[in-house]
Image 1 (tube, rainbow, N blue to C red):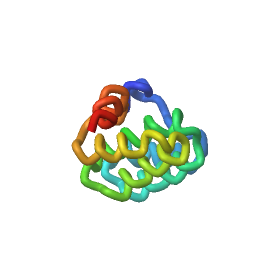
Image 2 (image 1 turned 90 degrees about the vertical axis):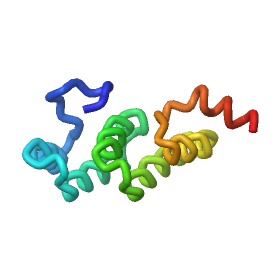
Image 3 (image 1 turned 45 degrees about the vertical axis):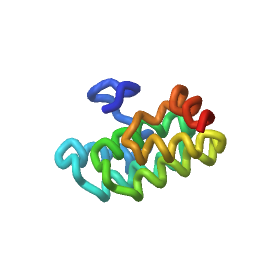
Image 4 (image 1 turned 135 degrees about the vertical axis):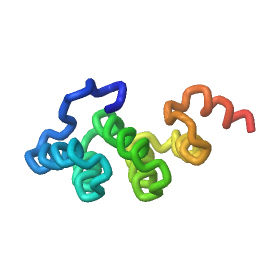
Length: 107
Protein backbone atom coordinates (compact mmCIF):
# COMPACT_ATOMS: atom_id res chain seq x y z
CA UNK A 1 0.00 0.00 0.00
CA UNK A 2 1.13 3.54 -0.54
CA UNK A 3 1.36 6.23 2.10
CA UNK A 4 -1.98 7.52 0.81
CA UNK A 5 -3.78 4.24 1.47
CA UNK A 6 -3.76 2.62 4.89
CA UNK A 7 -2.84 -1.07 5.04
CA UNK A 8 -5.88 -3.27 4.62
CA UNK A 9 -7.87 -0.66 2.70
CA UNK A 10 -9.43 -1.48 -0.66
CA UNK A 11 -8.59 0.94 -3.46
CA UNK A 12 -11.17 -0.15 -6.00
CA UNK A 13 -14.79 0.97 -5.98
CA UNK A 14 -16.05 -1.68 -8.43
CA UNK A 15 -16.87 -5.31 -7.74
CA UNK A 16 -14.45 -6.49 -10.44
CA UNK A 17 -11.71 -4.32 -8.96
CA UNK A 18 -12.39 -5.55 -5.43
CA UNK A 19 -12.10 -9.15 -6.67
CA UNK A 20 -8.80 -8.25 -8.33
CA UNK A 21 -7.53 -6.83 -5.04
CA UNK A 22 -8.52 -10.04 -3.24
CA UNK A 23 -6.55 -12.01 -5.84
CA UNK A 24 -3.54 -9.76 -5.22
CA UNK A 25 -3.64 -10.61 -1.52
CA UNK A 26 -3.09 -14.24 -2.52
CA UNK A 27 -0.64 -13.53 -5.35
CA UNK A 28 0.85 -10.04 -5.42
CA UNK A 29 2.32 -10.67 -8.89
CA UNK A 30 -0.98 -11.53 -10.64
CA UNK A 31 -0.70 -9.45 -13.81
CA UNK A 32 -4.34 -9.88 -14.77
CA UNK A 33 -5.48 -8.42 -11.44
CA UNK A 34 -3.05 -5.51 -11.75
CA UNK A 35 -4.31 -4.87 -15.28
CA UNK A 36 -7.92 -4.74 -14.05
CA UNK A 37 -6.95 -2.15 -11.43
CA UNK A 38 -4.84 -0.08 -13.84
CA UNK A 39 -7.75 0.04 -16.33
CA UNK A 40 -9.95 1.28 -13.50
CA UNK A 41 -7.32 3.87 -12.52
CA UNK A 42 -7.30 5.27 -16.04
CA UNK A 43 -10.91 6.39 -15.60
CA UNK A 44 -10.34 7.91 -12.13
CA UNK A 45 -9.07 11.31 -11.16
CA UNK A 46 -5.29 11.55 -11.12
CA UNK A 47 -5.32 12.24 -7.40
CA UNK A 48 -7.13 8.97 -6.74
CA UNK A 49 -5.22 6.96 -9.37
CA UNK A 50 -1.73 7.92 -8.17
CA UNK A 51 -1.89 5.57 -5.18
CA UNK A 52 -2.63 2.62 -7.46
CA UNK A 53 0.00 3.62 -10.03
CA UNK A 54 2.59 3.94 -7.26
CA UNK A 55 1.70 0.44 -6.04
CA UNK A 56 1.99 -1.14 -9.47
CA UNK A 57 5.27 0.54 -10.49
CA UNK A 58 6.85 -0.28 -7.14
CA UNK A 59 5.81 -3.94 -7.63
CA UNK A 60 6.98 -3.98 -11.28
CA UNK A 61 9.64 -1.24 -11.53
CA UNK A 62 10.92 -2.39 -14.92
CA UNK A 63 7.49 -2.74 -16.55
CA UNK A 64 7.51 0.08 -19.06
CA UNK A 65 3.82 -0.40 -19.85
CA UNK A 66 2.74 0.56 -16.35
CA UNK A 67 5.14 3.52 -16.22
CA UNK A 68 3.84 4.71 -19.60
CA UNK A 69 0.19 4.55 -18.46
CA UNK A 70 1.08 6.40 -15.25
CA UNK A 71 2.95 9.13 -17.10
CA UNK A 72 0.24 9.45 -19.77
CA UNK A 73 -2.35 9.98 -17.04
CA UNK A 74 -0.15 12.66 -15.47
CA UNK A 75 0.41 14.36 -18.84
CA UNK A 76 -3.29 14.32 -19.67
CA UNK A 77 -4.06 16.22 -16.47
CA UNK A 78 -0.90 18.30 -16.02
CA UNK A 79 1.02 18.61 -19.30
CA UNK A 80 3.57 21.03 -17.86
CA UNK A 81 5.07 18.30 -15.68
CA UNK A 82 5.72 15.92 -18.59
CA UNK A 83 9.48 16.33 -18.80
CA UNK A 84 9.82 16.32 -15.05
CA UNK A 85 8.02 12.98 -14.71
CA UNK A 86 9.88 11.40 -17.58
CA UNK A 87 13.23 12.41 -16.08
CA UNK A 88 12.16 11.35 -12.59
CA UNK A 89 10.90 7.97 -13.79
CA UNK A 90 13.98 7.24 -15.86
CA UNK A 91 16.23 8.21 -12.96
CA UNK A 92 14.22 6.18 -10.46
CA UNK A 93 13.24 9.28 -8.51
CA UNK A 94 10.07 10.14 -6.63
CA UNK A 95 7.49 11.58 -9.02
CA UNK A 96 6.71 14.58 -6.81
CA UNK A 97 8.61 17.06 -8.94
CA UNK A 98 8.85 20.31 -7.03
CA UNK A 99 12.62 20.42 -6.63
CA UNK A 100 13.36 18.39 -9.74
CA UNK A 101 11.22 20.67 -11.91
CA UNK A 102 13.09 23.73 -10.69
CA UNK A 103 16.38 21.96 -11.40
CA UNK A 104 15.29 21.08 -14.97
CA UNK A 105 14.49 24.75 -15.71
CA UNK A 106 18.12 25.67 -14.96
CA UNK A 107 19.37 23.35 -17.73
